[in-house]
Length: 258
Image (cartoon, rainbow, N blue to C red; front, side, top):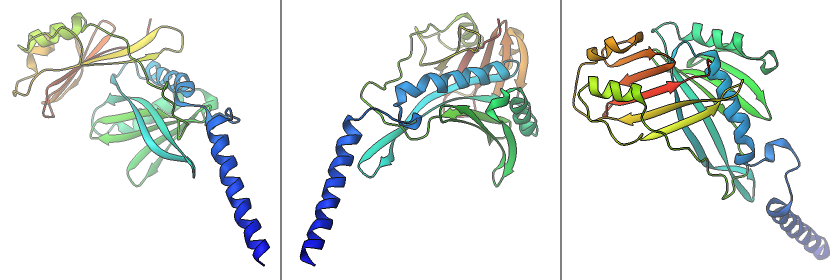
């Protein structure tokens, strides 16, 4: 019996060693093993498609999220990459928005809206093991996102963002509210459009003092008008001003429409 126990232990050690070597040296053999940087173009393209679908609404791209710590194998950690956008609508019309989005997405994404314990939920498959999700995150706010699932994360997987100026629309909004105009944006999110070019959101914080958003009304066509959130369109740009948190937050988003 001793030889059987010894052989079993040796086999286990050999398998563990082979798994360790394979995780670190073998190239990916299936799509879900592609790294975050390899998967990001698919995720970004899916978000660009979502932007094109909702370009008539009040929307803004959300920050890119990389979450580490998921398990690829017992011996290897991975990470997930998520890109997305928030869409503001009238309270009570969130499901209608999700259904419009589902109807306008490509047929091979098999998009659909179902109710779960937290409300209506959009699910779709953008291909390459990238999942598209839509859900209500607050009254009148719908979050659409695309995510990779757990992937290998390497040191070259940083998502680099270009530098952007504020733009005339954000500068005009800040001046209308009596806030100083900073030299540059606090945050920029960019995603490719289906027909070429890019969509982007440029975001800036502008202090903590309470204020009225009424001075913004002459600057464009209102899309959302609430006491603490106001969004309007100025040409191709959607400006969203949110005074509901600790910081006044302004975002200018340019979509995919030519």
